[in-house]
Image (cartoon, rainbow, N blue to C red; front, side, top):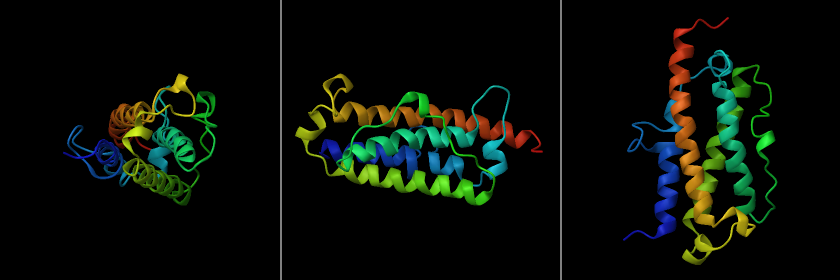
Length: 160
């Protein structure tokens, strides 16, 4: 039987980087080939693909900081404060950070002991490490569905 930490890391990598078991895709595949113009194309009142990619990484990077010994400094009110994307280079920089942080996050998870997974995440009110890792996996799946739909919409809508 695979250790709990290894299973969590595998599930996290599946949704972010290389899986297709649950959603028939993953975040990397869904964002592959998306241009910066498509990523920033506004459809009605919906978030842009770029805003969602930033939002996902905002939480991953914030929790990764805790895994690396830092403090928990993320706040919901800042989770969509994406920097402007005005070029393909800006978009690729955001994506590269997303992939790098996701792999670092998974690597940390994979090394966790059962005791750490069960321990309180920075404060008991936030639940255990395992609960927060599960929440990050679920959070990515939630926004992955939105990104897949937005990608279809922006590909059908001319970008000006």
